[in-house]
Image (cartoon, rainbow, N blue to C red; front, side):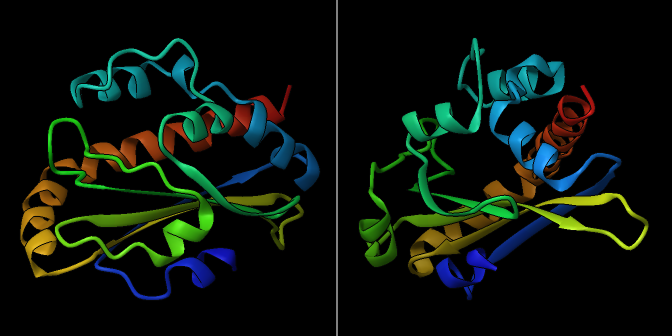
Length: 173
């Protein structure tokens, strides 16, 4: 998987998946066109995080707000990355390209990679999954990240579960 190439070692991980009764190519296409801001759960949790209420939230718009597309293996996997001080009110995101992301080692910061995968499942359906990995650059970042993650992990998971649901709905249209 591409995510392994970008972050084989990490401090925290979160995984979610769901079966989708649509062809893999349709699910992958839906992944790119789904507006995640249409979900009330996603809008509410992002507003709670202080990110406001986005008018539209797609994978493309995420790359305009600090995420960098690290890799894409259509129709099976896409990987995004972001660096910052996620535990601060602003998130402290640092704008990077893929190569700068690979070399990023700024003390006091963390990096995160986030993928979506689409794989055939034995049942004839498709397995749509997402994984988020976070790596703290140093002990200072790790000390600051851990309490933050303890608080936001549940909401982060709810956002990803809602995203998977939205992609599945979009793929079935």
